[in-house]
Amino acid sequence: MIDIKLLREQPDFVRAAIANKKFKTDIDSVLELDAARRTKITEAEQARAAQKAANKEMAALPKGSPEFLTAVKGMKAMANRAKELEAEAKTADEAFQEAFLSIPNLPDPSVPVGKGEDENVVASTWGDADADYPYALPHFDIPWFESRIDFARGVKTAGAGFPFYVGEMARLVRALVNFFLEEARLNGYEEVLPPIVVNAESATATGQLPDKEGQMYVDEKEGLYLIPTAEVPVTNFYRDEILDSDQLPIMRCAYTPCFRREAGSWGAHVRGLNRLHQFDKVELVKWTDADSSMQELEKLRENVEATLQKLELPYRVLRMCTGDIGFPHAKQYDLEVFAAGQKRWLEVSSCSNFTDFQARRAGIRYRGPDGKPITAHTLNGSGLAVPRVLAAILENHLQADGRVKVPACLQHWMQQEYIGEAK
RNA sequence: GGAGAAGUGGCUGAGUGGCCGAAAGCGCUUCUUUGCUAAAGAAGUGAACCUCAAAAGGGUUCCGCGGGUUCGAAUCCCGCCUUCUCCGCCA
Image (cartoon, rainbow, N blue to C red; front, side, top):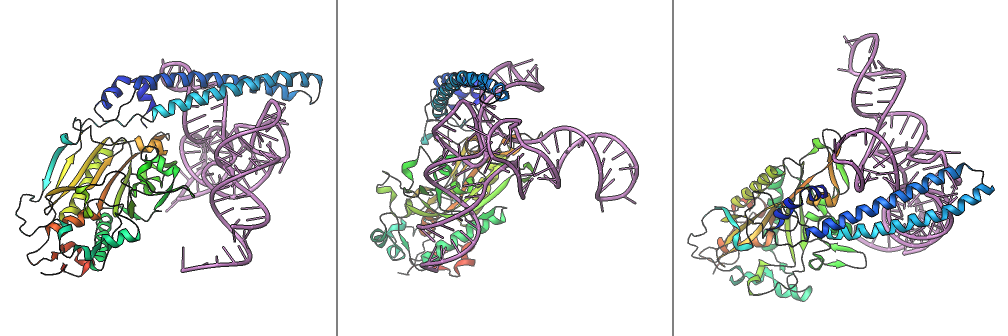
């Protein structure tokens, strides 16, 4: 949620700022609900204050005396009145909160204005996507692919989108996870191994609930959700806490499997590893003060880029435009690797600054110079998601003999220069 | 899963219907003093929201969470959560 004071004091500024986002909000009705709510709260509090004052006088009277009994009669009416007004205030407040939560975060001024994904700006490109890849194939067309990543048996065992990784491919996935974690560690991120289920409070704090409820797998009996990303449990680590400012920025990384229902998003272009219900990812999360989050976003993006470079995969950085950044995002970069077999760019990381939007909702603050709590800023980025990186490795590093060359940076964990079968 | 006990402010811990937003101690901050990495004394020391142009001030709420009883609840009742102990089960 945004800062309510900003909305009250500069409604036109807010209106203009979110005009270019894809989420539509009626600012005027939010302001009206806010005014109505405040009137009701004041009324209710005055009634309660009057009751408490009268009550205090009454408490001094001898219990059971005639004066006492008379006073009790009057008090009953006051108590009922206060209760009524409090109920009205609560209703008005809930109506306001619901409307207020529909206001998206304000895009940073540096975000390019645009209506949708076609207007994202390519900020930079690394490597040579136009190079000749004479042996590249879509990864799902590599002859030995199904013997290493077994979708059919995954369907039998769990369902579509839950493949088995077998033998050297399982080891390659593990190598990638280790490599990503080690990169993060060397860049100063402290590793955490979080729960991979969260409760409704946590899912609400980071914004998965209520809007994206349909995207998560849920255990209704226990009220637990399988995480769609490690962002959820990791960010909630500090929910409802006040941090010391000298701790900031806090940098964490976490490997987890991620679970996404991806309801209604299946089609020809999501074959193979392009989109799965379960996948492995290393997530980077930062908590910063209010002044340095934009710089920290650049560092975060650079950290992820450096990791991609070591994998020798061409990629590009997209500056997401106002019409394509997410609801809680102030600024967002997407990193896409070029998969030479499919001749497609595949998103492997999204690096985002939520400014104070998510932290306000999650109650994450730090103490400022005067000791007063200030809402923190939160950021996160994938560093990286395994399956699409794996897809690009399989496609781009496919050799003349039909095997795939394992990038040098993974040797430490793989101890194997090639995978697959020679023709 | 069964039985029992407990959940109070940064920490320890009083408090069983009104004088409790909450004793006391510790910790922390500021000041005073003596002066050598310390002692003593004084004052202060949570959060959210409403009101106010702002500050000051005022008000409401918060004693695990949510309901209820009552003129009035940290204190009584109900549900839930968590922790601890014992038993059971188990990687």
